[in-house]
Length: 448
Ligand code: ZN
Image (tube, rainbow, N blue to C red; front, side, top):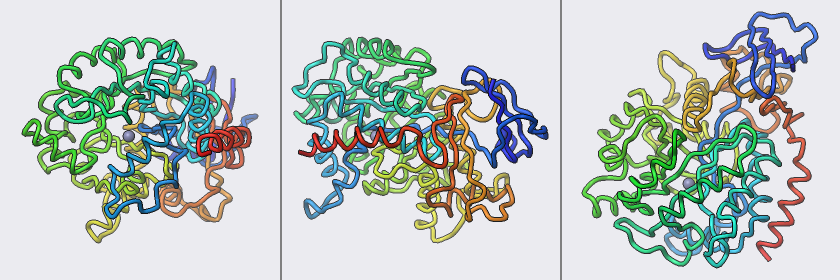
């Protein structure tokens, strides 16, 4: 039994003082505010670890490699060509090494669980590996190396555009048919370790026909269902041409949306779609840093949150892994659009940092199919702040999350426990060096 005592801790009702947390078998066994520390380890302020609902781990390796202008109108689609060329060469060992680096960085910034939207299934020639879940095994190995919680979301991908268009050669490593996908998911399950769980991810309405979507949904069992939707205006127009409906509108009308679902991006929404999505119980998986990097657009967060919509954040392309940075980018996108300030706060939660953290914590746990927060029975996923950092000078607890989200740089996070195991100490992952060496070796091979 581990005993951790915090001067302050973020509990479901907000900040509490003098909180004693006990941990048994990686889970929280008790939470006691107003407690004496006794013989417990003493720390500053604690928050629960966040769920990162959307990652493509291998893309960490191409961060910074697509910022040179390649054609007069670079956009998401020209970036995708660079991404396809990068992944063409990746072996399972490369994926494990690159993904582990991304996961180490996630833990260092306060993400303790990741939803890996995993579509790189086939070998370099497009054939299945002898074990169809060989690549899933590489992701599990990366999660084990870093110690992060894993929600594995094997992707179903069959087409290159709406209406069942055949895949292009650059997609040969992603594709499967419905039966092959069911085998892949079962084979993936066999690789899981610890409290890892499994969902599914129909890639997008571009890559999956309505018939295929119906056929694969039972494979999810009770697990999460994630899908990319309405990231790009061109995708919205193509969906309208195909079906007469916009992507999110189509899903609201035709898919059995419920709280197991997470719509990734959902950037381009009409007011009507936004209202309906907000009351559907579905989580919108927002990736504001990647969406800014790819020039996707601005999610209508003020409208959506005012209607009670649920959100979570993801690091998606892993261009710059930073849990606080995603929340900051979300708030800043609204400010830049409206030329006003503090836009995601409301009367119940007047601080933007607090409101976004609270919502992303709840939405992240929902979308990853786990319990979140410092509550009995949840995984002991705990982040403590270095309260001696100048950024927290004379901090009233009510401003701690705003200081972290808006005013921090490196060094604000001191320790991170994941399932009770200390993964980050003094702001640095305990395996950071070894993981970085393997990452550098893999990158030299891939970029040679
Ligand atoms: Zn994505």
